[in-house]
Image 1 (cartoon, helix red, strand yellow):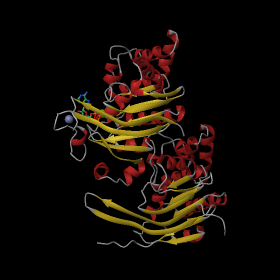
Image 2 (image 1 turned 30 degrees about the vertical axis):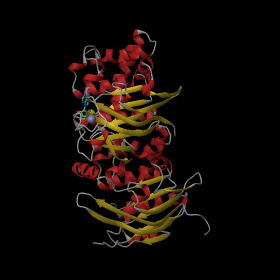
Image 3 (image 1 turned 120 degrees about the horizontal axis):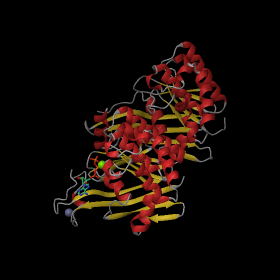
Image 4 (image 1 turned 180 degrees about the vertical axis):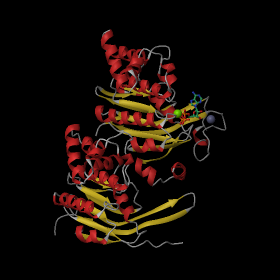
Length: 234
Length: 276
Ligand SMILES: Nc1ncnc2c1ncn2[C@@H]1O[C@H](COP(=O)(O)OP(=O)(O)OP(=O)(O)O)[C@@H](O)[C@H]1O
Ligand SMILES: [Mg+2]
Ligand SMILES: [Zn+2]
């Protein structure tokens, strides 16, 4: 394949320095991977190998300690996400890069439909259309309609996760980071999620994902990258 | 994206000041009081850019200079140093070089402020509606009934019972006072809003209403905001980028989620850990 990757991570390492304890904690070490448009790369490895840290470094929730994170923007520019300005990152998050985590931070009174439609609102889509598209996704993900007009604060873990997923997928980002998107779901709901992710892939979204189950990796991944637990130098 | 505000090297000293004030205060000295002249260095060398529609968070412990920063920008006081440029539709305005009439005009039309202390933001001797009318009167030509209608609209918008618009705000609860302040600040639909601890001290359900309202305003009017708070939860929900201040200095800045999940500075690490 001669196509350029959407994302190319070269020798990414992340360490934390805890001042209080005067301690360096290595989290991911020398990670190399690529993600192509319309393909899914799965990150595997034991706990402590720094899988989530890699996703967070790409999203810049973590500051990468070393390495390059080369991303091809929609405008055709290669941007090192490790060095990009904060405003550039904010714009990419709004327009191009999505992240589905296990946590949901929402406004206390915001209704689920609006939580899901938020990425569309940020892109200037009006409320009516945003809510209509959110409803479609929520239905597809099997979230009962009676929950749509309620804030997700009181939802179960699995419901919150699907709300998160709907929000991550709604704007069809070019690059989507998925951190265990099906961790708390039953088999039937997992299938729905898998179908939805599959469809977004076909529509061209490039994905980097962590799955809690090897079976899902087999079903979903076009490429698999295995991480090792970093060696601690004492 | 368009810049709306550019702040460079903003400094404020309360007291006579001396040549050693800046060199002998700050996080390294663990004080903002100059040992040589006793002045308080409330702010030193604050710089940042703010873009249209962006929410910037400023967090830090009590006394770190957060309120001083927004008060300087709202012309409540003149800083001892630094500059701030406001990029208005009609051109660039160097805030601290404007004459009093120009300053008043920006304050009344283009900036909105919600003070930490409602005493400063509201006139307690006139009704809630009157507070808003006052601001409308300064900005547009409208007749009495238009002004009253607009004030009612704004109060409804901020969920202040409109039956109470003729009451004095000094009889309101803290949360209501804050909402009247927000209504007042919004009266002119300003492109820049300064919010100093808008939710502090309010019970959670009122906090929730105010946070919703702030984000609604931002998405509806594309208002740029500076949100000052020591509440990390508020920062997380509102601000895209955050500055962390201590003893008048910015000690760390970054994307808000990065500041909260991967803080670099010892002080920020401590602040975040203690909030968990
Ligand atoms: N008018 C003033 N005269 C003298 N000192 C002042 C004045 N205003 C503020 N200070 C001092 O300047 C420093 C910064 O105060 P400021 O009100 O900006 O802090 P803050 O970060 O807003 O704190 P808080 O979180 O408690 O509101 C403090 O040490 C304060 O005591
Ligand atoms: Mg203050
Ligand atoms: Zn001094």
